[in-house]
Structure formats: structure tokens, C-alpha cells
Image (cartoon, rainbow, N blue to C red; front, side, top):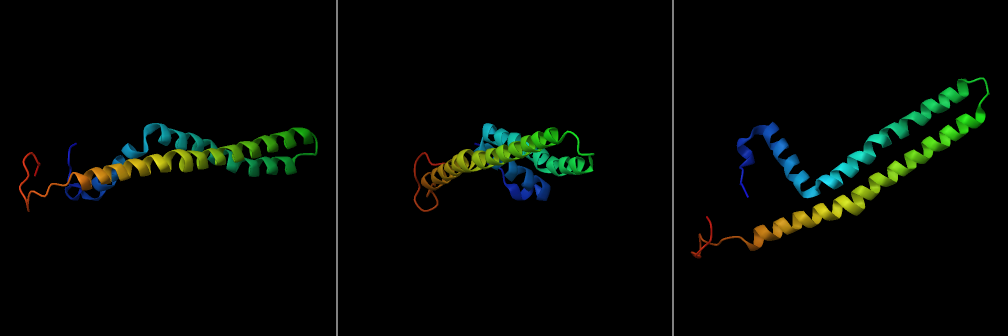
Length: 124
């Protein structure tokens, strides 16, 4: 593993380094699921307000159309909200936490005490 000193990168470089570091632990599938649920969620949370405005501005015809449309938009909003929570709580958090803790354990158990006691084969 290549070791980079983030302090020499500057503020923007450090941000990019740490975001990339986190994304490696999250996994592309989990990140894709989170983004894949978040993008339609922003649409399905916003549009029902405009749908109700169209409905109230209409002449009262096609009430069944507006009811079905509003129920569909509400259901999709609820579904994408559940998808965001599922991808975050069930998929992303446990996997990234496990990987972070495994990396920390590797660092702690692999620490070389060569400054105190020279150990053969230990990197400095």
C-alpha cells in the first residue's frame, strides 16, 4: 500500500484524498445503491407538491387521474426513502465500519517497535 502524507497535499488535496479513502472502504456497489436511491428520491419528494397544485388549479375533471398520480408519486417517494435507509443502515454502514476497523486492527497489530527493539523483517 502506498503511503501518502496528506499534509503536503493542501486543503483541496486532503479533501480529495480522504473522500477517496472513504469510498474505498464503502465499496462501489453500496455507493451506487445510495446514489441510485437518492436521485429519484429528490424527484419523488418534490413533484407531489406541484402535482397537487396542478390538481387544485384544474377544473375538477380527471379527479381519478390526479388521485392515481398522487398515490403513485407518494408510493415512489416512500419506496425511495426506504431504499436510502436500507442502503445506508443495512449495506453501507456495517461494511464500511467492518473495513475501517479491520484496517485499524491491521495497523495496530502490525506496528513495528523497531525504535525500541530491533525486529528482523520489520519495515521502518
